[in-house]
Image 1: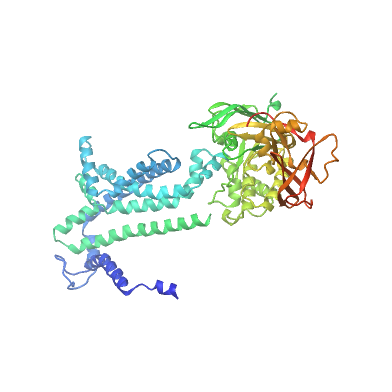
Image 2: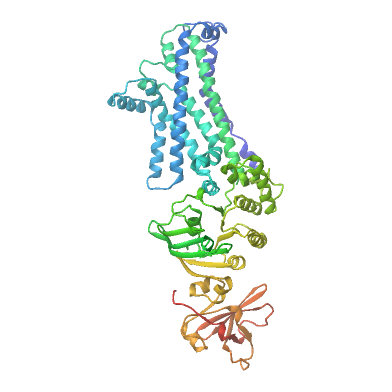
Length: 272
Length: 339
């Protein structure tokens, strides 16, 4: 009886929770809605009419969408690969041995994601200036890698800590060198964590604006392009169509990452 | 000449961790085909010695030879030595069969051959037909057997076992003791195992090295170590013993040295006038009785020295009884002055 009573959430709390969800998700719904509006110059509510022609317009007669899209995909892909390599190595190093200052170094790895993007952006911009590195696709990639490494590191380090250190020794004992041990023992154990970390990193990079603004030269990534489109009111719903596309492209990996890490915890627990 | 070399040789080996000498000047020869126990309390250096043989640790001083070959700097994966880990360290993402075949797969043995060999190895440890199981589905005893098969399938010259029976319950432990012994005899491989359980060491090993504080304090057959402990530490650690001070020993026909007297060598009698010439005796009052199944341990206060006698169950004494303790003078073993 009492446990049942505890499970019933008070009405006030339920209303608050629903209000919170609406506050978070109504703007998203509006983005979807305005992708279908017939009014192209301003966001008028309610929309005077609904149409799917903007999807067609975006696909057929707006070539200016494609270069930013390709650039964003390219940046996100390379930043993710860099993050996978360096994030995994850092996690392996830091979870393997205990030494003085380990927690501090661990914090330093995580810091870029806690810092406001604007700080990271300014810092990188002045660093590139001092080193006279011209702004290019590669400076954008490096900028994105700073926070992409963090998500991969965070995912990998948690999995490494659960990895029984004896497994590595057992593998070596059975004749496997470091590379074979990594391939046959470590990678299968941390694989899902890396996949999840990589997908999160990709999603983060794909819609990043602030760091990109500071580290880009003439290049325009997709989010920057969208920002520019909102400023001049021409075929505004096309921007929303692209927003819907970005939403899907980033949501799917995040959902996948969520299920992958949950699955990993499940199998990790059952092997005990 | 190479057939004369020992399976494992420690030459004045030391291994330090920071300022701690985990292994301190150990010299030891383990002969081919021996079932050898490294026995000692935790932190005595026995596990570090095992890891030195496996190659997970390298000596700071001295040398290790495996079948006459210097092992200095040779990584674990190039040693013809395999280990059964204390927690078994089975690969959780592989089936039982894949676990056992792992070493062969790394060596590049073809699928059909390694599956056949893994099958044989599993049959050897009485797990025939378990190939496709997941390791998570196995009991502790079964995991131990898989770990054993996974090591033996590689045909090691030396098999290392780290506390092999530590995680098993009593019944299973006794059964595995028998099986390990049988397996070792039939394979003829040198087995080196680490244990803190003196009963396990005495019942399984051909020879035992007893460790204390990074040093070997005695090496010998189980019976010589038990009957002739070289020091008070060994007398105390291997079995239980009455450690007699020099004065007491001298007064009862022994040497004026610290002396070990095993409880089961002492008989209890209610009469004090029937002591054979070859025996010593002491009279006292029973202060404690501890029933332990097959034996009863009786503590008797004789003047300043309390003695413990292990008598067959059913000995009829009560707390407060006045009794005479009788033991052969030859049962008193004088020991070195180490502790």
